[in-house]
Image: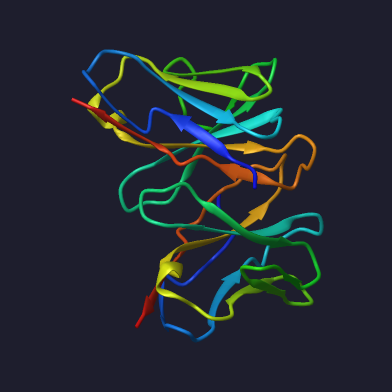
Length: 116
Length: 109
């Protein structure tokens, strides 16, 4: 089946630093990828849509200058949390839409970010 | 915003069928109903999706009412490993998924 990976699975960083999270589609091409954030005991919240070769589109209330998204290839999207603060600590999950089968979307395993 | 309503939690005995309801009364004609589940601290796992007709795969069955305002996910023989949060999602607008709060299914021995 289709596989989406995320790296790292866990990361701890100091307040004020930046951290990059990678999302890869391993066995299919993904023109579109999505980034979500999930706080403890809450549901997933869509942050942004990542489009290969173009700028990401952000959901209302999500700061585009703080959450930088790059989708440089058909299999890789990155999310960079800039100047991280403790309130950015969360579970970040990506999903990738199979370009050849637009009704299929697969989720990565998530990245646990802790900002100290 | 999520366009679905689900019960907060449900219990099911192991080996019995689990029937998870979802209301999506404002669904539009071209919007699909998707079901995913999330086991603690993992990414959501795809279960099934449908538009109008009932669907079945190796994991589950999806029953969509004729007016499409509600649906039911059926796990025919629940096991302990099916304990998870189940999300019903109405998908529109370039396949963006807006998750609701989901149903926590507790499968008990």
